[in-house]
Length: 302
Length: 290
Image 1 (cartoon, chains in turn cyan, yellow):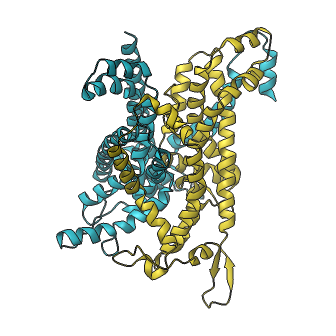
Image 2 (spheres, one colour):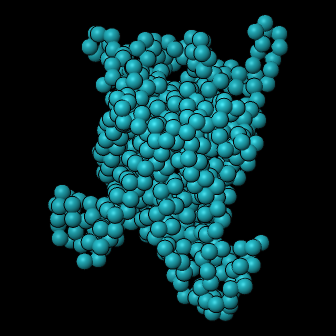
Image 3 (cartoon, chains in turn cyan, yellow):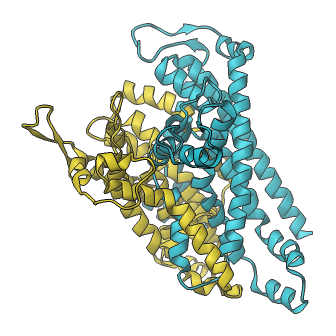
């Protein structure tokens, strides 16, 4: 094994990190970097992966220019933004409430937590397909309950706004427990003496939350914000199975558009161009997160 | 144990316990719905209003594995056993690979001198955040050209890379928490780094490795997007095979669909129940230290 040899031959203290991180970098390069480079390259061509016999035709930045002129694409970006903003907000708020409800120990807590966590252990296809049934205007439980309450027929996926709300509910149901998990872990990482000091001071629970609990979970909250934002941005399975972009194109997002362009229309070059735009958006978001963390670290050392 | 760790906080009052139980039931209700549907006969499954009481049937669990021909004379194997094997095999191998390669890299980042460490760590995290759909377009093509399309190698490689960034970040944070003196002593004695990692560090971060494994497992087990586009007939995983119950004209065969969902949920539910503490640590990507 080259790794073992390299580790042994370097006798001096510390050795080199290179042989240890090389396998990881190799795998990431193979599965992530090479495809990205190929994708950047092909985005300047008109190319269909289902017709390999037809050579790619160079179109320069044509694929990208098309997007600027294409009102539909901007609608997809707006849909994606709406979906991310509402879904992440709901998940963070509900997740925080869940964490506050579950942070105290009680008998049977393990079992009840398991019930709350069960949604995120399901396959997205299962969640999506079942929510599609729940939202069915005839058989769906949502329609049945609303009909009983208002007397009027109700189709949750019938109008653009209701379809968006339906997606947010399904996404939040599945992933708010994950935010809860993160915050619970954050709460348990809070130094015990801070709580003791606060209770000796007889601080009100409101004050205690803002002076002790909130600062100690701020980091985790930021991470939850990043992770859920990006996962919502990347969300595909749920949209595909629940609304499939409908009604019309009102819940079509960047991710479903890439899928449709790449695997339904097989316009590989164009799909790659759109993929690269979304890669860029994700890199910017991740970078912003890193800067926020660095700023917070600096602030806490002050 | 969670119960002990949480003792920072006072025990919950009755009102809070009741609220928590209610919330638990609300969250689990669609899951319970699915499990009930798996045992309902076809007419009962779509009854309106939904039936809470019904005569349970096991026919859907039989139908997961068997398909009756149109004239009712022949019984075919649906290949579900193979799908289940694929899910377990692909998941286990790729999570194990991600842990193995990940712990090496994490050790390199945590212990050994490296210029530009921060940049490497940033790019590694960024790799985890990339939109899968944007990666699949080129991957689909590259696997097709190289002839790896639909092979175990292809899908395992992709899942390994998908879990790797997360594994490196997690494991590094666990390594960072360890006390150094024993390691330093071993290093002074001339112990090779690989042996320090294997014999001194790894035994101490065992629960961290478990935490990483379970989160990676949950993500891989339920993945649909990579699997649907990158696996072939022989390597199909269960989330993709499930879609065969969704006929284009007949609609979804709810009983069989729910039965597959139920069977597929059981292993992951058991793992998550017994490793709940690890799940809790894993959720923060190891950024919270105790």
